[in-house]
Figure: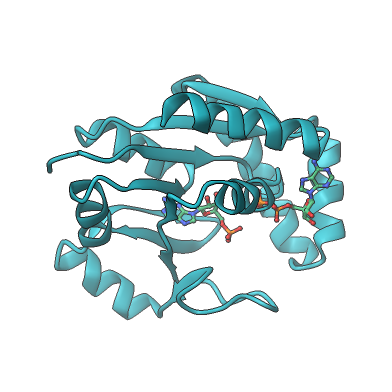
Length: 186
Ligand code: ADP
Ligand code: 5GP
């Protein structure tokens, strides 16, 4: 694949504030496009098909594995998530700046694919704060929260894979730091 555009990959444990921070980057930089992932998990209240995710069923997802649709895909917290190869290829060939919000397994696949991403890992200040954020978000049941907290520790153990590690403690500070990374790398 010809990579004329810049590719950013952002990963974080669930609840660290990645979606909140990415929204700020997208509002600040008009030339950054967001790669909308496909998932087999159910939409949360307020999530829009085609904007937050493409919500598909497991049969559709597995079929798209077989047909080579995915640039990367992973099973995360019991659901499938994947990034469309055609979309990313088209955007990068056009020279556009593209942002992927994917888990650490997916980030590893992108790094191994021959693409040259700017990789950023977002850390919560602590696991206790992470738990509170997931509880306060109010979108996940206790079992889902427990599973996401368990996975968080495994994800944090792999943060050394990433070029930048940013702690999302104070939101204003973290979003300013993230925007500075985009300014520098674009
Ligand atoms: P993620 O996309 O990483 O799962 P979200 O962006 O949904 O996380 O954030 C999880 C919850 O934490 C949300 O309710 C969000 O409003 C809140 N949040 C995000 N960043 C901060 C921060 N710096 N301080 C306090 N609360 C935050
Ligand atoms: P959530 O269900 O909270 O939206 O996302 C759960 C996790 O799946 C997050 O770590 C998120 O980054 C990851 N994720 C979202 N889309 C993709 C994708 O296309 N590929 C991979 N590998 N992970 C994804």
